[in-house]
Length: 133
Image (cartoon, rainbow, N blue to C red):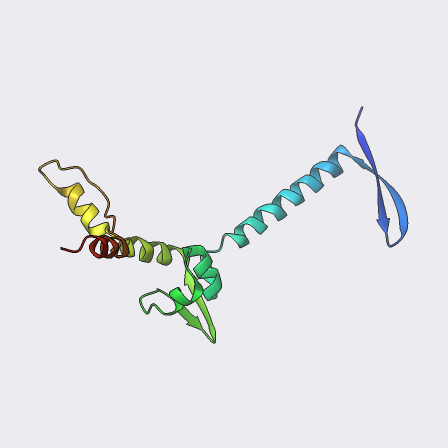
């Protein structure tokens, strides 16, 4: 005994009753999964198109990214494109204190590796202004 599914679809403004058997349902499910996997492959492109997309990916403002000449990019005609892996490598190289962190990790004396934390200059100047020497 095969199971069938009845659905009603509208073609224009006319409702049409359709009965689908198990073979038809499995064919439709296979076609939908293939369409879904190809759609996923297209959205997972290694490229970002435009300054705005690259800035959103990196997490900085568009102007900050556009004014840095070291940002890895390619021009195709008038469009600017970025590779995600190159932006990731660029970010890793620009991580504040990354050299200091690596040096501390490689230290043979066993000192604790601590990432660099910059001292706020405004706080230092405020302390200097409140406590004149």
